[in-house]
Length: 387
Ligand code: NAD
Image (cartoon, rainbow, N blue to C red; front, side):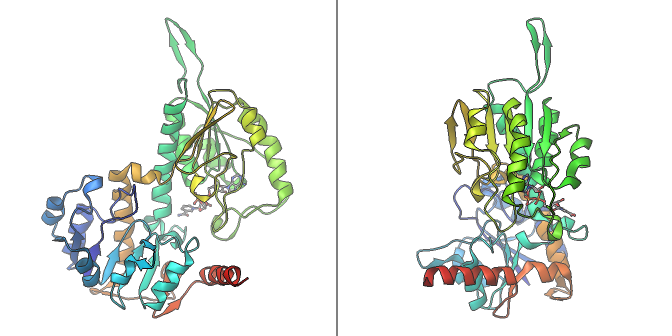
């Protein structure tokens, strides 16, 4: 069975789906690994390292895709101007990667039409059993870490408290909004840098995790269910959003740096920081909006840009894991290795759809789209284009 690693084609994507260490593990298990020449270059893994690990290097992109039994990617395959990267895969082959299934359901539809078996890393369940395959978590953690560093660098102040001969510096106040995987890592990193950290989330269950990292949890009693299936946040009512805005406004006004990470799966990111709140912040303050790609948690956020309003710098980074490509590739490769070991038995793919991980993450199989949320998203798209 041939496992192929494609070179990433999205601009700025520096990660690679397997690193040499994971390649050698797969080769030891009797699998053949093909690598597109230069696939690991942007993450500082050379073709020579992959070759030493047992991979075969292939320079011809079309040949690599055509030979693959299982093709591995990080970012979603490119699909524009009538050309789909995945058209190079042969019928019946398997594709694994972040496929953006709800953001770009047409891509999934075309995989089904071509009878590709596809696994979307976004849809690996967030359960203990699937923890080591959970690439959303491994990559969100990198993003949270980097967000805290970006805030510290952009702030015209120190993060830590310092007592010096030239006087005492008070520690920076950091407010983290959304304490999921990325938020918790941002809290931990800001704490290590010496900032005083507060955090807020609509899921009350995260209170203890926030406190265990040495941060203060800002509580907003909301009289409604805030947790959906799988432990994710549910989209809350306008009244609940308004109530939380009133409570958090005072904390935002006092913060030197605000890091926002709030997301609701399949929806536009909730607006947490309004124009009025930004106008009430101290000049020189910084906001790092990790939801920039999903529409942003803050007024004024522009994905991929720094915007200055009322003296506040609003930073909307995109694809932060790609900016730490060595470790994000290492973690992603481990997620992929564990998934492959779960799917491949006796040298062949064995798909048991009774298994909750396979059932959730496999989005296309034998010509069918297997996920009702993707089917619903496609129906909405076709209704919009028809009407
Ligand atoms: P996410 O990226 O979907 O969202 C980030 C955070 O934003 C979440 O904590 C969410 O509650 C919060 N949020 C959403 N709307 C908000 C609002 N209006 N105001 C404030 N905060 C808001 O979340 P994630 O980091 O991917 O984690 C999602 C869930 O999966 C969590 O319950 C997490 O504990 C769980 N999880 C479980 C495992 C596991 O068991 N193996 C692994 C990872 C994550």
